[in-house]
Image (tube, rainbow, N blue to C red; front, top):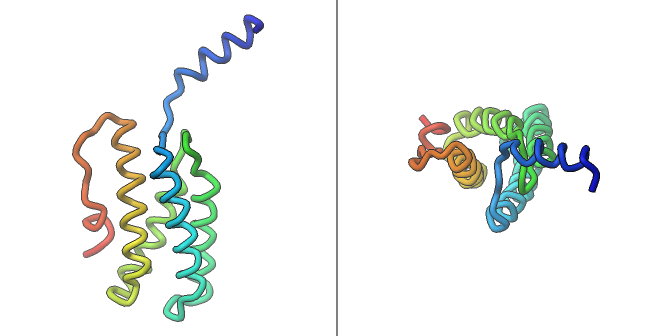
Length: 128
């Protein structure tokens, strides 16, 4: 190994990242796929809003890896999903349940990275 390679490895080893357990990462992928199907099949959501939700969902999925430095796309999807949840209330329950579970997983990963033990209840962030 060259000195430059060792130098770069040392620098990148110090970069903090969000890390999903294998089980959480796999569950997030399942939730994303379920949300894609539910949103696509929804008769409540307008085609324009579906496109926005699905675009944000795809961006979030593209950004998520077992180890990742950035989860900004997660917040974009949560914001867009929150609009849908508030707009349709109980009728959006299949979306609400999956978004809440997704949120719990991602927030737990964020809190673990930041060394915070107490997790906020995701429903308090999304529901009135």
